[in-house]
Image 1 (tube, rainbow over the protein chains, first blue to last red):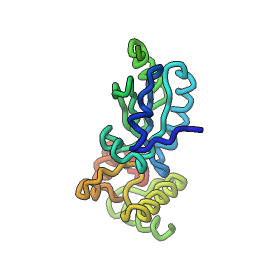
Image 2: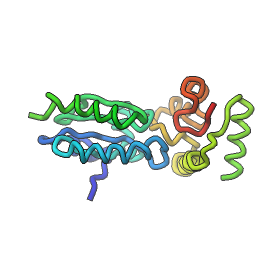
Image 3: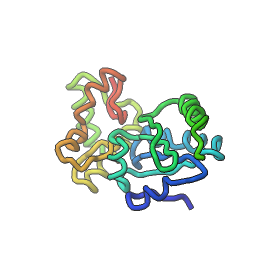
Image 4: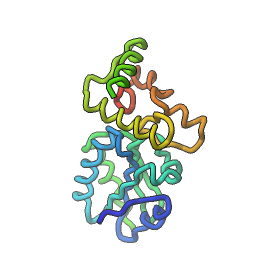
Length: 111
Length: 84
């Protein structure tokens, strides 16, 4: 069963000792979010040994959405050991996200 | 829904741009606006998170404070309701 992020469990869930955590801040009716979602799911499979994808509906994570500048969504934040290390906003091409993830996982794996 | 689409379409034409010709995108955005109106009291853009700061959040009520600049720069507003 997929983890549903809320402001209550957010801090706990982004702490993964073995993988980096990719958080997708989204809203149900957001068109660019719905286009980005399957791209992120596909990339999670490609990077499954290094990354886990968690979904954060901004209605359930308002405090963290604000904390991580999700005033425009989709906003995607990559966490390592619970700390944000990089992010992007909006719908960007799959190839650009893949390149970004490759760069991020190289030399950034949790120790 | 039809009345809202008509109103946004008229607003767009008056301001020199258009409602997105993609009806599916328009329907999705409008459903989001109506859902936000029902849950949060105003037609907040479904592609923006709310801060809890009333003054800031009012800028996100559709048509938002940013749409004209976005249409001029990107050819469409961020959520895709309006196009150039």
